[in-house]
Length: 92
Image (cartoon, rainbow, N blue to C red):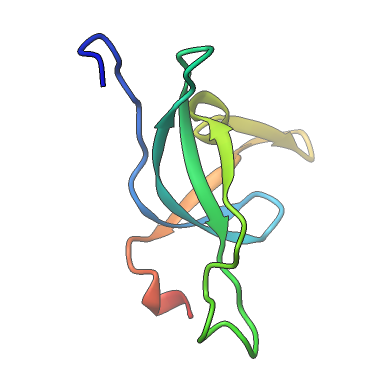
């Protein structure tokens, strides 16, 4: 990686989206075209098949600024993603 690239990251672990779903942050990334820091995360699956595949097969990438930003819900500013736990196993 070139020395002039700086990736902003969030703590790995479990986060709750403001709509209720839980996700696991798996790391950060750097968008090669826009030079934007991204957050990589995947749904925390809960259910009968979660023991064999707790993270699912999909990975999302969201711009860092959007991931750590806020949204307006019922006239109130709330975090888009709220950190819950660094321990993934405790959420299964």
